[in-house]
Picture 1 (cartoon, rainbow, N blue to C red):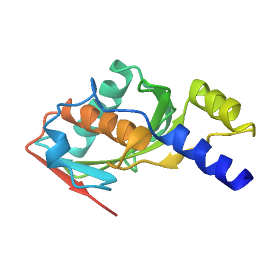
Picture 2: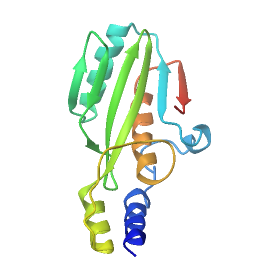
Picture 3: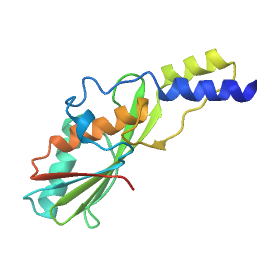
Picture 4: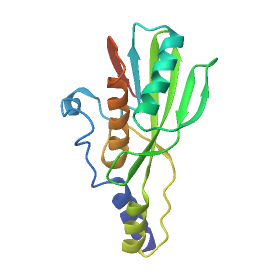
Length: 160
């Protein structure tokens, strides 16, 4: 019985969430299932792209957790992307390409509801997000929306 409650808690934490209001519905047909990496090609130099990515993150309300101008990497703190879902990004710039990954976790409302429903203490930890279902998909959709805000000539979705 306890295993069943644990499974139900997991389902409650990961499901019942959409990408509505984050990205254009066209992505439902464009992004392959379980995609977990996005790479865009730009006309910017690595330095310019790094600076632009930082500015766009800050402009959209992200807080930078760690960044390295030499390695051209940026990680963000968790940010609410709605529906009790948090997302944090890891971005890497190589030449004129920006590559992004996203982790997700359920917010306090979702974990409290799952704990109340199951009767066991449910804790939410950071997990890799992908274009799948529920909260992981919502977090990944937020990364797509961020990348769409950077002028680019090509976008590639990859499952690693």
